[in-house]
Image (cartoon, rainbow, N blue to C red; front, side, top):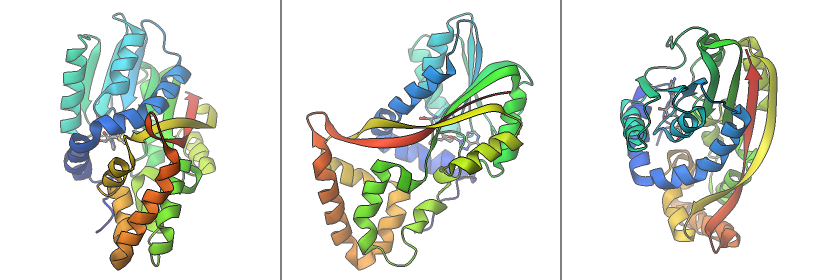
Length: 279
Ligand SMILES: C[S@@+](CC[C@H](N)C(=O)[O-])C[C@H]1O[C@@H](n2cnc3c(N)ncnc32)[C@H](O)[C@@H]1O
């Protein structure tokens, strides 16, 4: 199994909507706490105009639209047409008339120079082929003094939930098996100092990056989480390396999850970068 290339639009137009179809509710529940932290840091005000980058099915877009109210406006941009359709349906179901949704590559698309008060993103800025160019494009969309607030995945070993999973399978994965997870685009901004440098080179000012640790419900029980992980491309690419030892790797995974089972399901700690900056 090869690592999908996240700069290939097919990943987002085919693989991602399929994964969302199978696990969207779970992914949503896992990402909501980080999205809430991102929105709080964005401190959106009534009447503001907001750009939501890599908005996916539109959870943060709709939340932002509620916060800016009918006199404000939120534009969600995503390279995935099927995800934008889901976002559209969500905005419609919420009876929001201040949301517009655009299928486009946020790295290059001109969404309106200097026209936004805030750019927000919940895990949607990690997949630019040229991150400096991508963030410079986002900076240009902000009015002078406009704000960026986003959450970004940290390096696997710095995210307790992912580290638990990877540590459990590590003894059964040969060669560079564990490194394969790093090849996946989600971790492209995971190294904090590199992330700071990208934002600096892209022209952002007053960059504030902090690690935020959140309790995340990853599933209902151990079986549920193990089934999910075996269907999740980033983890599957690692498990695949275990080959004949895969049953041992899966058994080890199960064992590692047991201590995290509680009344609310399987709840683990996840650590993400919460980043704010100004143009
Ligand atoms: C991990 S998902 C996060 C989706 C959503 N923000 C959420 O939290 O549910 C990353 C999203 O970024 C989108 N994406 C990836 N590369 C992009 C690009 N260059 N321009 C716009 N969207 C992109 C994907 O289609 C996907 O919906």
